[in-house]
Image 1 (cartoon, rainbow, N blue to C red):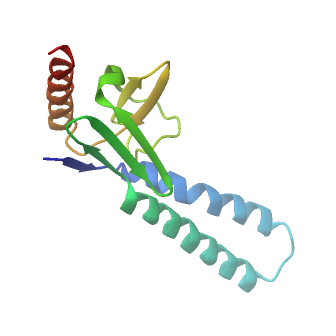
Image 2 (spheres, rainbow, N blue to C red; image 1 turned 45 degrees about the vertical axis):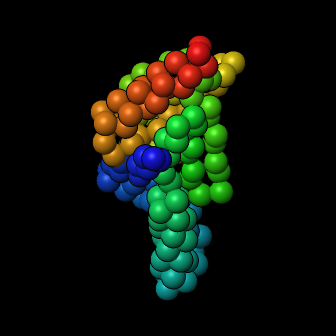
Length: 143
């Protein structure tokens, strides 16, 4: 049975992602002498585009544990990580770009020096299931 988890979300992080482009646009347009009505419409359009993009990413961001793989999907991006290749899992608050909408993350090390950070909604349950499936996968290999 596959276990699917969505990304946990930090509202303050989402707010910062949306607010930064709007503030930059306001700063640039504020000094240009452009008609204020046009600036307001452009700002609104950018906010809608940014929110739509973020909403689309959030709607498609999920993590699936199968019997032998960890599948990560976020928008047009996808990662397939064989459980037998995972070498280490540790909690992190690293803010680097990743398929995670929260800084309450798990850093997954796999393969030869690869790392991916995810933020499942129920981190403890997700981690317990992942470790159990990794152990079962390793036991199946040694038989």
